[in-house]
Amino acid sequence: MSDIYLLLGTNLGDREYNLQIAKEQITAHQLTIKKESAIYETAAWGIEDQPSFLNQVVIVESDKNPERILIIINIIEGLMGRVRNMKWAQRLIDIDILYYGDAVVDKPRLKIPHPEIQNRRFTLTPLVELASDFKHPINGKTQLEMLEACQDKLKAKIFLAEL
Image (cartoon, rainbow, N blue to C red; front, side, top):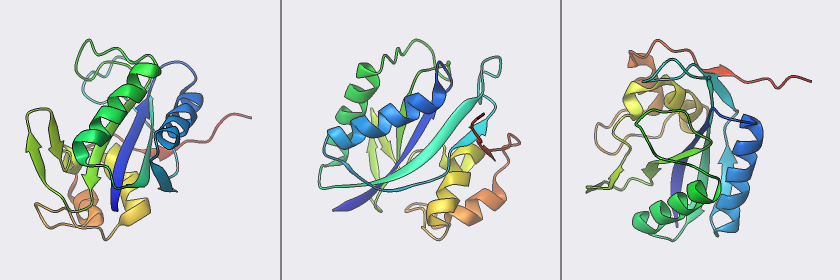
């Protein structure tokens, strides 16, 4: 069994609900959620003229191979109404595979570790919360070291729901 680090993101509709449904779907597809980070809110990255994102990292456990995990993620995104029309566009749900244990996968449709981890504070902040000492299998740096060196200026702040 490998620990698989997934990043969940949403900036449309009821964002908290979208994250909850995504986690329920992950579990329904026989992936065991072992740990969850806090939920973080961040301004949109890439295309900035859109609503803020809620992001969360979950660590799941599975014996499924990386390609199968990608298929499951695509199914979940489709079931939740994700439409892929433009890179960095607003979305109901986005699920990225950040790490699959210490595996390195380099295929046209699947790159693990995710090639942008070190450039995105909204990814590194929840990763540091869950696994600050986990080393990137290619560059050998811990999540904390990458966060400290990250040039991304967008703050990732813990999201507090309105009561």
